Length: 134
Image (cartoon, rainbow, N blue to C red; front, side, top):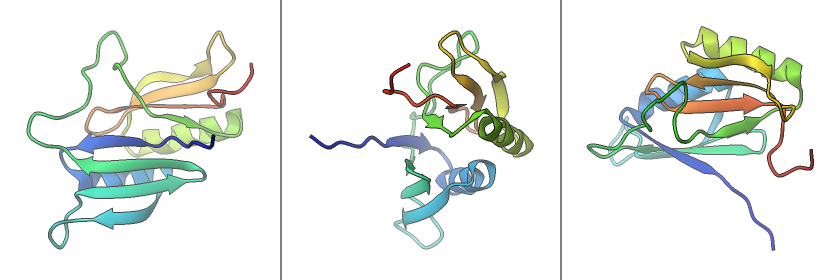
C-alpha cells in the first residue's frame, strides 16, 4: 500500500498565515482557493516533500491551548541535518515565532526546536524523520 500524510491547520486569518509560512519557513504556495477575490479559504503549501494545508477557521475554531510549554498537536517538519534545523530556527525566530523549545537534542536523538506561529499553532522542526528506524 502506498500512502502519504499531509497536515491541515485552521487559521482565523488564512491570508496572513500563508504569508507568514512563506516568509518564516520558506513554503511555496502550490494551490489556493478563495470564495472572493483577495481571500483564502483553502491553500496548499509545499517545502520539499512536506505539504501543509491552510484552511479558514470557522467561529470558535483555533489552535490547541498551550499547557506546560506545549500544545496537544503540532505539525512535524523533518530536515536533513542539525545545521538546517539551526538555520530554520533563526529564520522563523526573525519572522516573529514564539519559542517553546530552543534547538536542542531530545533523549531519542532528535535535534529539534518548537515554536508557536502568530496565531498560536505549535510547529516542531527537527533532524529526525518519524517512522524511520532509530
